Amino acid sequence: MGIAAIRKRKNYIGLGKNFVASAEQLKYDNFCIKNSIRISPSPITDGFYPEEWRVAVSLGSDYKTIYKTPSTYLVNEIWQEIYKTKKYYYDKHTR
Image (tube, rainbow, N blue to C red; front, top):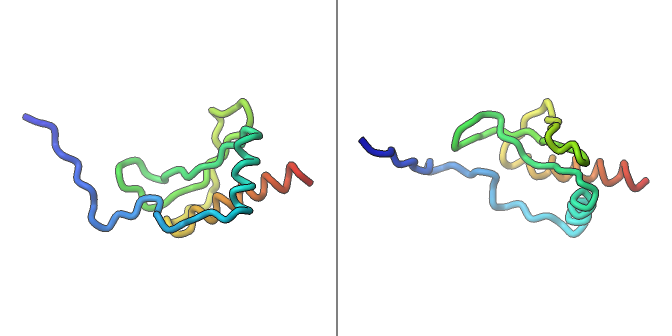
């Protein structure tokens, strides 16, 4: 008996490699980090190769409470939605 090797699926993209944040998006990112607003992708299914994602948000010192969006997103959409959420919190707290 041995440990089965886990092989990477040939066409699996993961969270993608083509997204590059703009300077404005990095400003939203820095604001969220400084204000303890945690926004990240969360996979829909367990396992090594998730295909669909949700945006997960936790606020302030209550980092264990995670709010997830009801909508699901594919790899090519998730980073845009994450930065839309970061922009929402940036606008909410700076205006």
